[in-house]
Amino acid sequence: MSDFPILTAIIITPLIGAIVVMFLPPSRPEVIKSVGYLFTIATLALSLWMLWAFVTKDPFFQFVEDHSWIPGIGARYVVGVDGISLFMVVITAVLMPLGLLASSKYPTNRPKAFIAWFLALEFTIMGVFLSLDLILFFVFWELLLVPMYFLIQGWGHERKDYAATKFFLYTAAGSAVMLASLLTLGFLHQSDTGVLSFDYRVLAGWGWQGLDGTTETLLFLGFMAAFAIKAPLFPFHTWLPDVHTEAPTAGSVVLAGVIIKMGAYGLLRFSFELFPHASIDLAPLMLTLGVIGIVYGAIVAAMQKNFKRVIAYSSVSHMGFVVLGIFSLTVFGLDGAVFTMLSHPLTTGALFLVVGMLYERRHTYDMDEYGGIWKSAPVLTAMFVIAMFAGIGLPGFSGFIGEFLSLLGAFVSERPWAVVGATGVILAAVYMLWSFQRVFTGKPSTKHPRLTDLNFREIAVVAPLLALSLFLGLYPKPALDRIEPSVKRTIVNLELKTDFEETRPEGASKTTLPGGKQGGSLELGREQGRDQAGGR
Image (cartoon, rainbow, N blue to C red; front, top):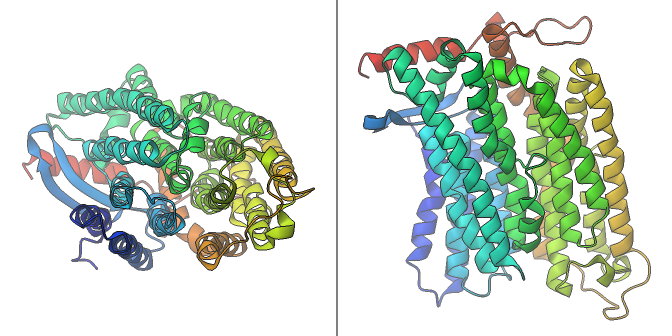
């Protein structure tokens, strides 16, 4: 493993698949679909290999690859994975073949283009989660807009053109501000040290000393402009319901499961290390926006008549829990945030898949057109009920672990926000149970008295996600053992760079890294800076 570029292989495998699909004859859709499955499963196999080889107690980046890329602007090809990004890579690899399997009947028009764009989307997502150079990160971040735009525009529903354009413009606007901020950060580093670098590790070791308070705050807000829109954090969420409603089922699964997590990942990855003082100073603002998102998303979800919009607004609410955990500035809270980023794709992905199966049968998302489904489709109903309870955060499912840890971390450090945020758990039960009653119970619709139950393929798509959610809910230790060391590194670095001290439960020991070490990116950043200054 030490000699094999596993991360590059994970990134480039779906791209190779997309290129292969482009050269296949469109008259052979069965071959095109088989190639799509082959390359998504190959990416999954590589991701599972990486997960197996990942050193559990190591808090730093592993499998790092560092190569010259564009030396004229200081950009390098640097990729690495730690406990924060590990499961985002794995869950992406899990969702992609399931998304294709769920779409095996759907893209009857132009399956070649659909699968090529879908594989290209996986390529960009993997690049985002594995990039450690800010220029490389931005390239993947922006490239993602292209395949997602064409998937919505080409295979979406009635207002697909509007939804695709809105998604592209919203996210591109935030990305433009982030680009200006990351360029400013790199050039300030060059002005101070004489070395032009966009290596995240180098900048993390320098920025907390080289930036004044106002500059740091402005750069934090510049990065947040992109991350808050993608998350989507209230009030930057308005694009999400429209895009979810019009996107094809596979697009909604990936959007809810992975793409909106990129915003939270960006906040967690870059905010604390690059802008530690600003992260602490603006934590109350971020907590407030997170709590508003929890409550607002839940209330608006309960008011929807469109089944898909219910789940879309529920994602806004769930992402509020992620933000609450991140800016609680505690190990518990960050554990909960990262765990929720792993759990939410399983539960919400399953919900979107089931709703997509309903749409294939009735060709509508209007809940008034349903009713009494449980009588004619008991297996479909059972799948939805399990996914619903998992999404609500019922103990025994992964959603409970993530929300509990996020609320616990906030309760320890910022109790008022935790108390208000906890109401989101109750509200989630309200809108999900109400939706279940309107769609699955009562009298069947007079227009459509019966509904075809799930077939084996559809069960095979949903069941793995629910099984994983149940496994992680009952036994979260394997995931938390890999997440927590990197989370502790983040908190320790935050304490070293500022006068901040983590709020811990009474009697809890001070957070340290394995072996009693403290710090991380500081030492690495200085070493990298010296290497680059020496002409590496």
